[in-house]
Length: 91
Image (cartoon, rainbow, N blue to C red):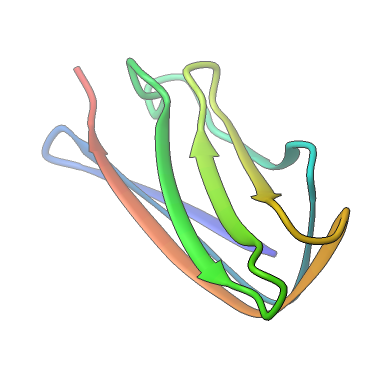
């Protein structure tokens, strides 16, 4: 999984992309952001729906952890392709 962060004009954009990304039903930290890139509140973005009904969730936490997790379905999911981004304001 490749994660990039770009700050510009009071906003931060995080992009996570990769092939055969594996998620579980527990948060997996995929990146740690530098201070100054951290959001004031958790930022979440849904992605994908697998054949068994699971859906993925990327979260950017207030301590800079970027995590992936999935809900429902099997304990482990392999996503053929993940390409998700989220933009949020910073103070």
